[in-house]
Length: 375
Image (cartoon, rainbow, N blue to C red; front, side):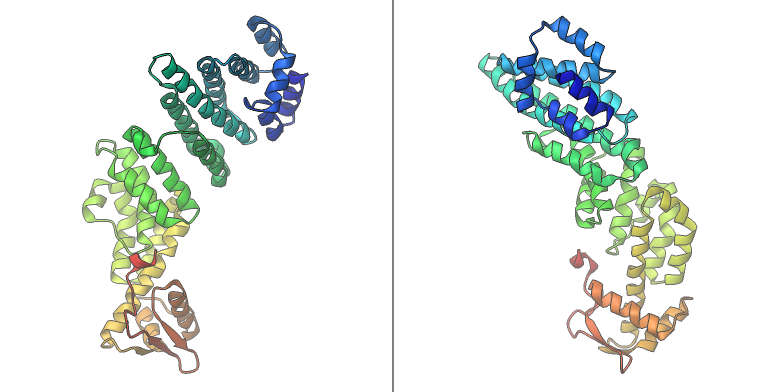
């Protein structure tokens, strides 16, 4: 009866139902143990007869994990649960996204069993090692889900939140206690997810950590981080250093023109550079973020107007219009007013607009605040 229900859930891709049947600590496991009285060989043969691969192996090891818990042998239970997760991860890249909730349950139970197994090993006078092993398995699951074709091809980065939940649900040590390579991996992926969720402050923190801790010899990995770190930093006017761009010529061709445009406030040059590199940025998924940094170039230009006008706090809108025209951007006064209003809304400029008088009135104190302070 149990195997039939699991098979139906798999056939109809009912993730919640299958996940419930594959949960070690649940009412389903208690019912399963009452139904399952055969020896190990009989259980394995029955699973292979009733279920298709890889579910026959996953379910078999789930049943054995439940039996281990029933026998209060958490070390054995962890071993079988680990096998279930490993088999699942082996096939997961070939699946669609429907079994994601199953992975969450498998990982959560793996963490709980690892804690109990280590306690049992300590009581036996043996070295506890299952929690550390569990961390490696969950880290692998996390990496597969974020880097795998399933999610990036589907553009479903939000689905990765479930994997983060699985990591947090497991009773694991603090991230700082794991090897640096593992820390870098996690911080890179969480940084990328934060980037796509427009949480740029967290994205920059995680991506900067990853970049700072990747040895220089891993050129490819460092470049992967920079694909997201540079656009993140452009948003607050932090431009890539010449030395850094020289280390990565492929990024230099893409970002040097944009950086020069932002630094000089040349909006037209920025637009041209964005147009040239647009297809590459779209492919990376960073185009919209880089496009948002156009506002930083506009702000630099407007600040130059402020400086040239002896830093007076009242400026006519047509003065900004002339500045834009000077760098090759011809817009009417209404669009300039809209640009200024947007600058004020974002906090790039402190002041207010007088539509009737066509004047920008700037704050007496720090009218152009540091962009770093606005994060």
